[in-house]
Length: 119
Image 1 (tube, rainbow, N blue to C red):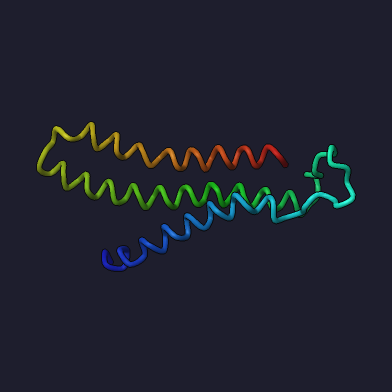
Image 2 (cartoon, rainbow, N blue to C red):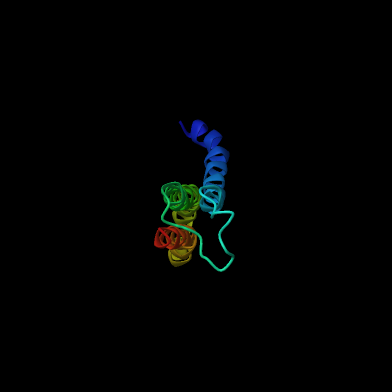
Protein backbone atom coordinates (compact mmCIF):
# COMPACT_ATOMS: atom_id res chain seq x y z
CA UNK A 1 0.00 0.00 0.00
CA UNK A 2 2.85 2.38 0.79
CA UNK A 3 4.30 1.73 -2.67
CA UNK A 4 0.97 2.69 -4.25
CA UNK A 5 0.84 5.89 -2.24
CA UNK A 6 4.38 6.76 -3.31
CA UNK A 7 3.41 6.26 -6.94
CA UNK A 8 0.42 8.58 -6.53
CA UNK A 9 2.32 11.49 -4.92
CA UNK A 10 3.41 13.17 -8.16
CA UNK A 11 -0.12 12.84 -9.54
CA UNK A 12 -1.69 14.37 -6.45
CA UNK A 13 0.74 17.28 -6.60
CA UNK A 14 0.07 17.79 -10.31
CA UNK A 15 -3.69 17.69 -9.78
CA UNK A 16 -3.40 20.26 -6.98
CA UNK A 17 -1.34 22.60 -9.13
CA UNK A 18 -3.70 22.22 -12.09
CA UNK A 19 -6.68 22.99 -9.86
CA UNK A 20 -5.05 26.14 -8.55
CA UNK A 21 -4.18 27.20 -12.11
CA UNK A 22 -7.71 26.56 -13.35
CA UNK A 23 -9.15 28.49 -10.42
CA UNK A 24 -7.13 31.52 -11.47
CA UNK A 25 -8.33 31.38 -15.09
CA UNK A 26 -11.88 30.03 -14.72
CA UNK A 27 -13.52 33.40 -13.99
CA UNK A 28 -11.92 34.93 -17.09
CA UNK A 29 -12.83 31.96 -19.29
CA UNK A 30 -16.54 32.00 -18.50
CA UNK A 31 -18.70 34.87 -19.68
CA UNK A 32 -16.60 37.70 -21.05
CA UNK A 33 -18.16 41.19 -20.85
CA UNK A 34 -20.13 42.47 -23.81
CA UNK A 35 -18.03 43.61 -26.78
CA UNK A 36 -20.15 46.71 -27.41
CA UNK A 37 -20.07 47.82 -23.77
CA UNK A 38 -18.37 51.14 -23.04
CA UNK A 39 -14.95 50.78 -21.36
CA UNK A 40 -16.10 52.51 -18.18
CA UNK A 41 -18.97 50.06 -17.68
CA UNK A 42 -18.03 47.21 -15.30
CA UNK A 43 -18.38 43.63 -16.48
CA UNK A 44 -21.77 42.02 -15.95
CA UNK A 45 -21.04 39.58 -13.15
CA UNK A 46 -24.66 38.57 -12.76
CA UNK A 47 -24.78 36.39 -15.86
CA UNK A 48 -25.27 32.71 -15.15
CA UNK A 49 -22.22 31.43 -16.94
CA UNK A 50 -19.96 34.05 -15.32
CA UNK A 51 -21.33 33.13 -11.91
CA UNK A 52 -20.71 29.45 -12.63
CA UNK A 53 -17.12 30.23 -13.62
CA UNK A 54 -16.54 32.14 -10.40
CA UNK A 55 -18.04 29.33 -8.33
CA UNK A 56 -15.96 26.68 -10.12
CA UNK A 57 -12.84 28.78 -9.67
CA UNK A 58 -13.53 29.23 -5.96
CA UNK A 59 -14.10 25.52 -5.45
CA UNK A 60 -10.99 24.55 -7.35
CA UNK A 61 -8.86 27.05 -5.45
CA UNK A 62 -9.88 25.54 -2.15
CA UNK A 63 -9.65 21.94 -3.38
CA UNK A 64 -6.24 22.45 -4.98
CA UNK A 65 -4.84 24.06 -1.86
CA UNK A 66 -6.22 21.29 0.33
CA UNK A 67 -4.83 18.49 -1.85
CA UNK A 68 -1.40 20.06 -2.05
CA UNK A 69 -1.31 20.76 1.67
CA UNK A 70 -2.33 17.20 2.47
CA UNK A 71 0.49 15.82 0.36
CA UNK A 72 3.11 18.06 1.94
CA UNK A 73 1.88 17.51 5.48
CA UNK A 74 1.96 13.74 4.95
CA UNK A 75 5.62 13.91 4.03
CA UNK A 76 6.51 16.30 6.85
CA UNK A 77 4.65 14.32 9.49
CA UNK A 78 6.18 11.02 8.37
CA UNK A 79 9.65 12.53 8.59
CA UNK A 80 8.80 14.21 11.87
CA UNK A 81 7.77 10.93 13.47
CA UNK A 82 11.11 9.45 12.48
CA UNK A 83 12.97 12.39 14.00
CA UNK A 84 10.89 12.26 17.20
CA UNK A 85 11.78 8.60 17.66
CA UNK A 86 15.40 9.64 18.11
CA UNK A 87 15.24 13.24 19.44
CA UNK A 88 12.23 14.20 21.53
CA UNK A 89 13.43 17.79 21.92
CA UNK A 90 12.71 18.46 18.22
CA UNK A 91 8.92 18.50 18.83
CA UNK A 92 8.49 22.33 18.70
CA UNK A 93 10.39 22.57 15.40
CA UNK A 94 8.35 19.74 13.88
CA UNK A 95 5.09 21.42 14.94
CA UNK A 96 6.24 24.64 13.27
CA UNK A 97 7.17 22.75 10.10
CA UNK A 98 3.72 21.12 10.11
CA UNK A 99 2.06 24.54 10.34
CA UNK A 100 3.86 26.06 7.32
CA UNK A 101 2.02 24.08 4.59
CA UNK A 102 -1.30 25.04 6.17
CA UNK A 103 -0.82 28.53 4.77
CA UNK A 104 -1.55 27.10 1.31
CA UNK A 105 -5.05 26.11 2.41
CA UNK A 106 -5.53 29.52 4.01
CA UNK A 107 -4.49 31.22 0.76
CA UNK A 108 -6.83 28.97 -1.23
CA UNK A 109 -9.63 29.82 1.19
CA UNK A 110 -8.95 33.56 0.88
CA UNK A 111 -8.92 33.28 -2.92
CA UNK A 112 -12.22 31.37 -2.79
CA UNK A 113 -13.78 34.04 -0.57
CA UNK A 114 -12.56 36.78 -2.92
CA UNK A 115 -14.02 34.98 -5.95
CA UNK A 116 -17.31 34.30 -4.17
CA UNK A 117 -17.50 37.98 -3.25
CA UNK A 118 -17.68 38.83 -6.95
CA UNK A 119 -20.80 36.71 -7.48
